[in-house]
Image (cartoon, rainbow, N blue to C red; front, side):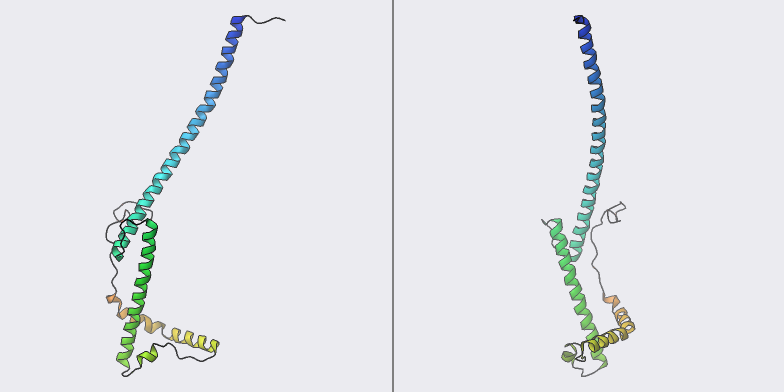
Amino acid sequence: MRFLPRPLLFFGLIFLTSYFLFCFSTELERKVVEVTSIAEALQRSLEAEVSDRSALEAVVTSACEGLGVPALGSSLRSRVEALYSRAGERMREALHAGVKKALAVVSSHYAGIDLPAVCEGYVLADDETEAQDEVQRLEDATTVPEDALAAFFDDEVELPSLGIQGPAQAGQQGPLS
């Protein structure tokens, strides 16, 4: 059995090792480029999310200020929940103000009206179907007058300003624009 001369064997091993390293480094370089592009895309996505979150926080803070909801030291979630609660309060206040105005208008037209009896609700038949039909008929009959009376009080409605400008209002593109 014959062996290759040592220098030839040595150069053969170097050649194979170099070829293996070249192939491995080319694949490694391709993977590095791929991972780098994925990392850059993730970085851009993260930056967009951070920007959107900042814009959302600015809008929520502004809405909190406009509705008188304390926002200091609170998480975004707790501030949104507080806004939701305050919006519910404002809707109830608006409902009560509207009912009060409507009762005042009715009282001005019908002297001696028994407002406590009116405030007990509809006077309806005992039959559920007849009662529902009558309520529907009454609501349908009030649609046009309701709009006219509501328009009469439109000037009294005041919405709070939103206070500070959000990114979309300041000329920047925001998540809500």
